[in-house]
Amino acid sequence: MERRKFCLAMLAGWVMPSAWAAELLLAEVYSDTVDPADYWVSEKMDGVRAYWDGQALMFRSGRRIAAPDWFVASLPKIPLDGELWMGRGAFERLSATVRRAVPLDEEWRAVRYMIFEIPGAEGDFTTRIAAMRRLVVHVNRYWIQTVEQFRVADRAELKQRLEAVVAQGGEGLMLHRADAVYVTGRSEALLKLKPWQDAEAVVIAHQPGQGKHAGRMGALRVRSPEGLEFNLGTGFSDAVRQDPPPVGSTVTYRYTGRTSEGIPRFAHYWRRREPE
Image (tube, rainbow, N blue to C red; front, side, top):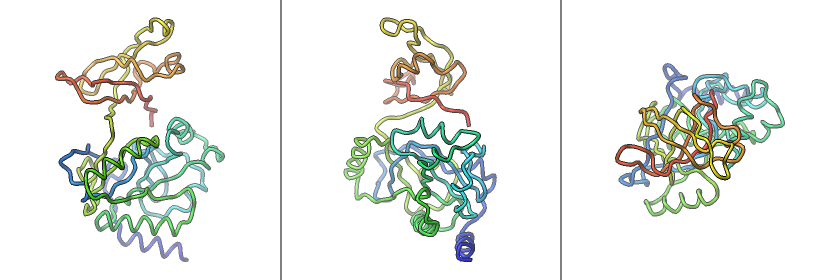
């Protein structure tokens, strides 16, 4: 009875988004012109984004995630947006776990659902943070948590926070306007801040290795969505050089700025994007 009352109370402040699976809030890139004091700040988790539509847990594409029944049994009958996470530096292990057609309980025991939004809920983001915190307290399951949100006074404190997160193995920070109502699509209501940028490209060829990499892949020739072609020659483990992402697959790379021709500077391989 108490659970039913809580769900009804949450539903009272929730509006069904249209075309739900296709419409989520996406981040823009942080600019130094932004005053971070207007935002809530959180760590950008290197996990797998997942939304709960009130009945099933899904990838952003809309494909269902085969989570164990016990993992989702306590979630309320309202949409939630969040990140499946195993901790810093555990993306590959997490990706393998959440993409299994048949879930393994022993692997899912290490997964956390880190909630950062209630899609369609009324009020500003500060109000939604309070609702998420109440929800997690009510659910009372160790694997269902909220992403920690905090405030900073100025750009100097934001920079200190970024440096601290990166030094501990984190990816970066997210900034969400405190007064923002819920919106979908790419919006400046949500910003991402990282010491590097990342993007995706399609593998179009394997370049043979030389020297110590003779007999293995030396570089990936890739094509960006804009049609730019360039090589990724660093960032590979020995295992990846031995068994590289196949031609036609999509990979994520990191870089710092672009040349005047638009080619990413210091581009290096990060990981293969698994199909959803």
